[in-house]
Length: 95
Image (cartoon, rainbow, N blue to C red):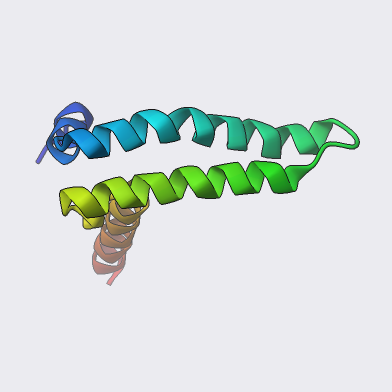
């Protein structure tokens, strides 16, 4: 069973409002991560602003997927499913 990331992204981002919210949230997300990482290397920088930006972006993503009706396909949920499934398979093989 092959997994196509492009097909998954296209099929879960069809609603125009979801796309708009992702277009707004993506740069905010990147800036938040950059500010959080920057606070590790630059003295006197404020990591709290990065966390606020990152949280805002995640909120926009959640809102978009809620509007589209596919909140369960969020990246973290999908990653958790695959990690949990692979652990089950490994545990099954080791028995």
